[in-house]
Every structure is written in C-alpha cells, then in structure tokens.
Image (cartoon, rainbow, N blue to C red; front, side, top):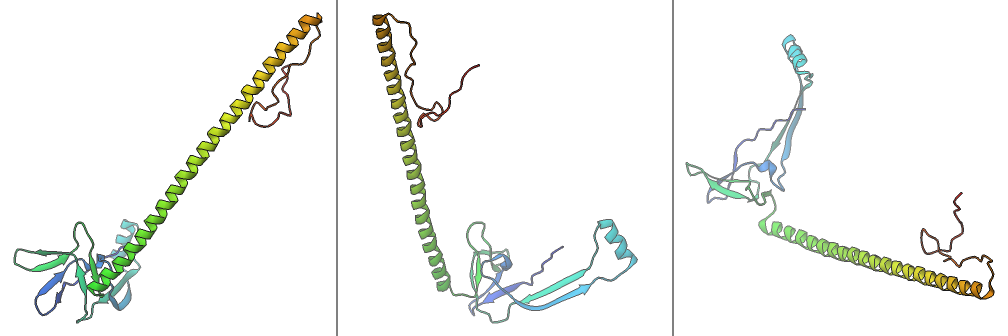
Length: 206
C-alpha cells in the first residue's frame, strides 16, 4: 500500500499577526475532522496492465481521505518559531523538544504535563523501591549461602577430625591387644554431593 499526503498551507491569526504552521500532522494533540472519504477504482487498460505486470503489483484503486480544519478554530501551538528571507514567520517542529498543536489552552497543556510528571515521579519512586528490594534480596541470599557453606565446611572438618581420632584409638587398641582384626573405620555420614544430608547409597569400585 502506497501512502501519500498533501497538506494545504494554513496559518494562525489572532488579529495581531499571521503565523504559518508547518508539519502539524506530526504534532502532539493535533486532530482533524474527516470531510470526505472516497475509494476510486482504477481503470482497466492495456497500459495499466503492462505497468502492473512490470512492477509486480496490481492496482485496485485509490482511497482518498480529506480532512479539514474548520476556519475559526482555536488552537495552541508550541514549537520553534523561525523567519524566512522575506520575513514570513512560521512555527515548525524543533530539532529537540516537544511540538504541540492542540485545541487545549496553554494552561490545560501545562496541567496535563504536570499530571504526567507526577505519574513519572511515583513510577520512579516505585521502581527505586523495587530495585532496593531486589538488591537486598540478592545480598541476603548471598549471605545465607555463604553461611550455609561455612556450616557445611565446619561439619565436614569436625567429622574428619572425629574419624582421625577414632582411627588413632583403634590403632592403639590393636597394638595393645596384639590382634590384627580389621575394624570398620568411622566415616562421616554426610553425602559427598550435597554435604548436608546423610548418605543412603554407596558406590563400590569393581
């Protein structure tokens, strides 16, 4: 679909001067009244069929929409005012900044922007609280994880020390009794994977 737009030059007049407005269709708050809407089917001809075939498309017709701005409408325009070589003043969209063409008054525009400013303020405050919550949650999780690892390491070291003490006592007993009976070594009863739960399986090398 090919879209084309043509705009008739128009101006604002407040009995003190005349100012042309350029590019109002891209402004915020600008709305026009639809005057007419017509669909015109394209005619069938050899030339049209050949052109459609070469371009790879088929022209169905043209839909024409006319929008009007009634004379005497009250508008508020906020943009960049420039003067050309012959002294004509026009208002256009600035390179940086807002461009408003609205039937509302300047006070209403300022009030509306104030409402949006308050909403943005509340939203930023809420996002700040949410960000602090996420950071605090991550810090608490990191602290608990470090504490859990420290507790597991302490339990493993205590179990290893207990096993070493039991081995020493068994060796002393064997030396005193003069017996060579093999006794089970006291091993830590912790799982070697999670280091937290008691193990319930044993892997034997064949």
